[in-house]
Image (cartoon, rainbow, N blue to C red; front, side, top):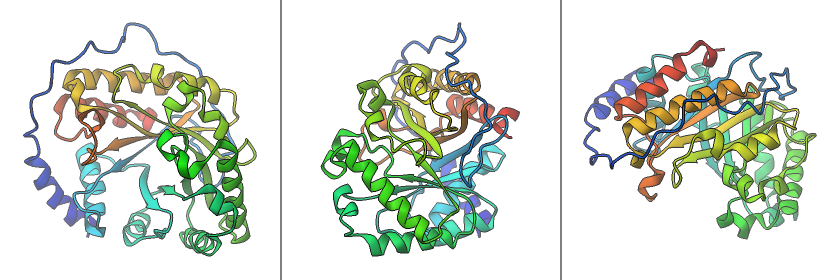
Length: 328
């Protein structure tokens, strides 16, 4: 089923190169000097059930399907893997608060020996702590337990975004909800979860993201989402404040989402990705990275990150993921 869907997607992708011409690209990131080596602790780490590699880093991705269906999800992942000539180490997938874990596509990925990072959009933190969602949270915990494989769980990723403040309320409210949900998972014996805390790079620039950190005893992996979208800067600069902070934590790091926008031009995107590869290697505490292979429909052009169809940019990414460092 999965391989048949791959063929369909490959045919579709073949005709998806008719984008408007790229604008004049900005100067490429400075590659004349080595990236900052900040998070240099190579481990080993206590990472929960989803263990970090001893050397190198896992590669994963979110790949937006043409249709959010079982067949669409399988085809999207299979198509990217076919183009890369390798399997992804893990697949990022998104769930609403009440959208059950362990979907048909989840099960097919798992049956094909894939690993999952589930990005779970939990709801209002104060209503969670008040017990308003206990029944549903327990149901989700049991669904994850039935997966019977280690899973990375990003509970309300990017919780520091200003547009989520109405449901996050504050750092202490988020922390209270995190501990409340994790306790329910413990009660339901969902012990195959590695808990991933994943704010935005911008939240660290503003200085707000650390206020949402539940604590070293609550988190298995630290994480950040980082994009060259509105700003075209090297990834090491964009996530520099996060790396400075994470280097002080005894945790492996996963780059939960990263991407470079199409508006910057093909050659500049390729240079940015080459710099990203060097930055990941210079910071061996980074044990996993996941590209955001998507052009969200309602997003601005500087939030379109898909690499497929952009020859130079895709080639740079392909070179990175074929490197032995990213095949631990």
